[in-house]
Length: 225
Image 1 (cartoon, rainbow, N blue to C red):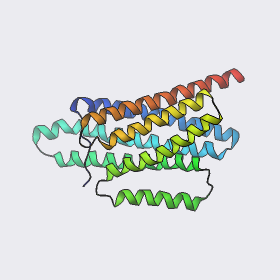
Image 2 (tube, helix red, strand yellow):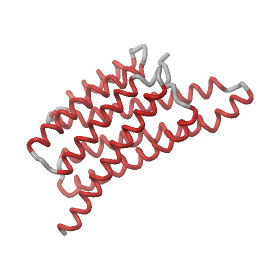
Image 3 (cartoon, rainbow, N blue to C red):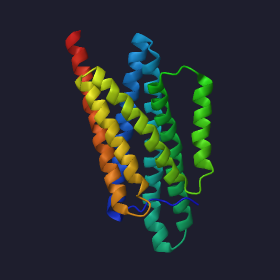
């Protein structure tokens, strides 16, 4: 059975708050991308929005189940029963988040590949999910695959920035770099709780940059009207 993160007791409640923040930001980004798609009918905007909707749902599910775990944990410890139930809820939250998040990251990576083939998309997604399913340590493998996909995405946005040196392009690039570093830190979170905290902090910076980028775009859009 896959190992679960070594989460510091003092940080668990904060992690739920951060997950809610991540869900809100990614949901806003997804909604805005679909607004752009309705205006332009660009395939890239539709895929971008879909990717962030999956990521948002992954954080909503994780935050919800972690909140349930937090509520039941005290009762379980005091009565020394239902600890197995709490563990299973924690495991379910980790797995659900991993699968939904990976789908979102894969859609982002697929978008950067500039490939228009549904069979290629489905085949690669099945390979990714089956790799996790048959892995002895599913959560660790999830972050390995996420890191690889995010690396390709970072390379794409880096090349895009070199060709188009704009502030919003730079912010997206830096945000993706922080997400990559966050995934790398989570790979070590199974055995070292400090990496779990650092991973959340890096994610927080990444999504904060995305929010700033979105606000800049919206502000620019109002000025051009």
